[in-house]
Image 1 (cartoon, one colour):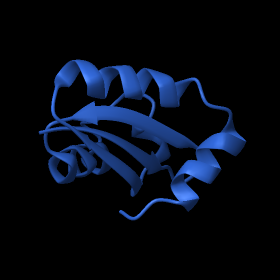
Image 2 (cartoon, one colour; image 1 turned 60 degrees about the horizontal axis):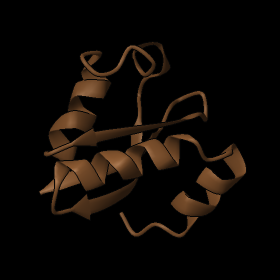
Image 3 (cartoon, helix red, strand yellow; image 1 turned 30 degrees about the vertical axis):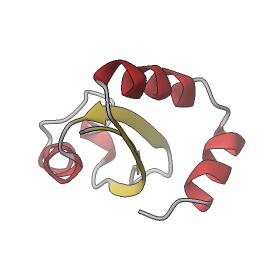
Image 4 (cartoon, helix red, strand yellow; image 1 turned 90 degrees about the vertical axis):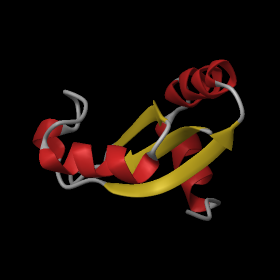
Length: 82
């Protein structure tokens, strides 16, 4: 399976990413081995995830979410059932 996930950083910002293993990826972010964006903003907390059957679909959705305004991301994670 392929996943799109959103984490909330310690500074209150959101980071959206793609992975095949959400728990491992969140652990990597918290260990400082994740994205450059999240390294100085640790710890991060998983607030949203979506599952897809193909990498292409998941990556398209990742791009879509990254274009969202902060308000729209807040609505997305507010409706999430992580």
